[in-house]
View 1 (cartoon, one colour):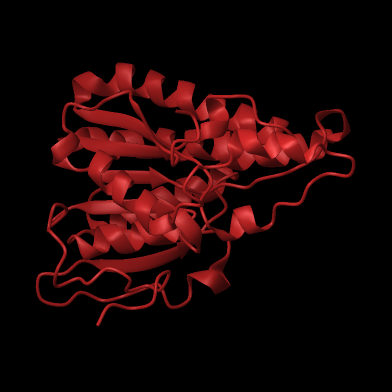
View 2: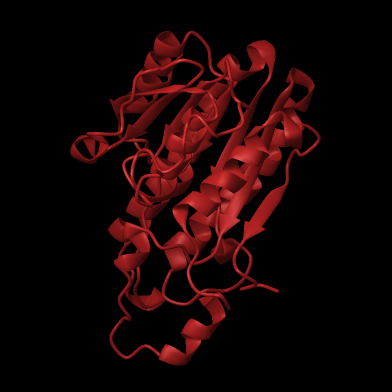
Length: 265
């Protein structure tokens, strides 16, 4: 019987296709939500995964050992906004796994406020995780990925494609992720490294459940960010990430995949 949605065993390892057999992956933001679902999905498809997050307590229970024909998940605690922590993370992941073939940058934070009330400290906090953290992990991982070729998948957002209210720092950070991803794709294509992004819309994750309308906000503006069929699931985004990272998407480079329930259609 399949496990309950959101559990570490949502995907049956025995039933999954083995697109990532023999592959080695690092997933950040893996304690919950999209990052956790992605770590589980890649392991379900045969990858050896290092799942990383700043929240070590929430990583508990995610680590799984290999069984016959299956992948495995090890965990590491790291703050992607710290240059030193990222250097240790990527080095440690490469040493544990023996190589790096796939890197998924899913670590992210979200903040809601009127733009004229956003503090510099809050602006810096959001960009340091979402954009600078993505850059730091990519920068540290690129030499490893270039050895035999590999794939980077960065988490962008529909917020990077259209104006979104009350999220100035988040929107700016995800727009930066799109531009960074394209730049890496062009620069490292000759080394066999692909860099793509996935832009989720509204997904049922802990980060979106924290949403509160700022005082005096116009609730009608929520229509701009509301998917027609309801919120998506972390597992659905993980499936999209797995496709983009797999050899099935071998000619996909510098692209962004929208998974948004027709929000931007």
